[in-house]
Image 1 (cartoon, one colour):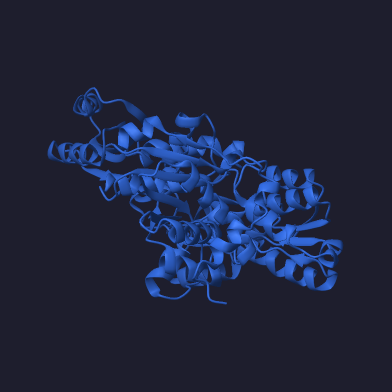
Image 2 (cartoon, helix red, strand yellow):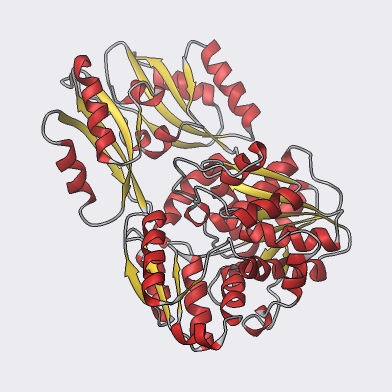
Length: 507
């Protein structure tokens, strides 16, 4: 089927979303962002649906269109979050049986939300791919109708109804709409609808820079499969976008930008300050993208809309978000500064910092020659951070900017002073651990007892995967053996042995 010529628009105009969302979700002004960015900014509040996500639109529209036989057999879906809630809610509304396959790593808050709607839940595998494979087998065995999360025209049309609402709610002088992209269902639907009705309005997709399958696919001219996706914005962590969604985005999308974890955290803070609601990372993507384009001076004239796509945030993640938001706003610089280990050096250093607010200061005596300080400093932007680093260097305080070093911000800042003079031939690796019972035991059992573990730091951010930094005492001649053993382990990992923050503070 050709996807041009208003196919999606026609389906969206005939979608049955109003049965479950009788009132359009609000399009709220964002006065703080508008003043800072110099353009009228509006937020499409998809976080205010009954499941706190736009996913209810596509799921309901797909299920409402089933015939009597399919309704009697029930529906099934694989999802780690919002799509699962959309399918379960829609099935309950329509009186259908629903079965949801979720990874074992799915946070309990999402499992509980799906269970509240009466769906049967199967917890299978460590990630979405494993859950989806089992779901397809189960659908074939049971005869249930599989409800795809994004690559289905009825689902895409359901999401596209958000675009129709925006055109009705926004001022006529509408310049751009920013849409988050995971698999591409929302972006494809909104872009296809809006471009048919108002082709002059720019539609910009926004992805996390570590889950940028659509951006890479558009650049390549064909669908690209990622070997690995980031774990923070889990709602858009998709390795390959859909065939339908890619074709529609390729035809209708004007641009696709990517943003960092820190920028997403800053956008969550912005949304909270504007609405007092806490968006999930994927839900704040569009705001982060709007800010990036605005700061580059590339916004067209007229109002700019960002779709706040979801608010299913785990409470345990809020500390991490708060910690990273200032860096994402370029209001904090993270620096590693070396000062001479002599009386008065500490005071001299603080004098150079001046009256700037110090947000973090970590120091421990490491040698009698020099000391390494891990310091966070409040700044007005990247330019001031760079100028401060230059000033410190010119005054005899060697300085390394760690503001964009993820290892420094995730692990090292909590371990300053943790040097181990007795550690020999140490190699450092960072890992992503599935948050499920037995993961640590699997890690240690697979690794065996050949090499001594000299360092271990773990943080749970309330996501499906935890972050681990691990040190091993490994003779250089055995490094290849260690890498082979880690490959057998099957967990995503990165060699951090030469990371500058690790070298300064941990080794």
